Length: 168
Image (tube, rainbow, N blue to C red; front, top):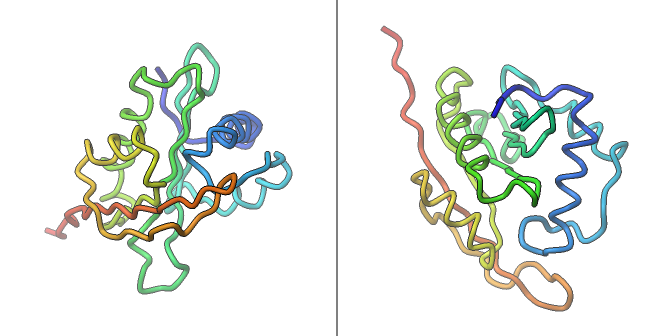
């Protein structure tokens, strides 16, 4: 299992994995597949030094990815990020999500990130379990805020504080 920073040539695989999550109605509020072209600006908005995207490669194939993106877009929130994580269905349950999550948490001090947030549907038990396993706690609950296939779904906000490194 190789974990590395995503490059432009990974965008097709990242989009494919994201699109694979749409029909299950567990991991994204998108209800229609997205194109690689429509994700290009999103990809380039991520910077290696501040808001990276990491991929997990298995046998030369991108099997999962995790991105850190700015929260709320205001300067006062610059040390807070939203975590998004997606694993190819054929690779789920094999520790890829755990490895990506561990790497993102370990990278926070060098990225000057002190707060991680996850926005997860209340019925997405596998993702809730993953985030809880890594010390995320419930910080908010938005009942019936999303409508997926005529079913109203809750959004759970999970958070985790990262202790900042003190300059010595």
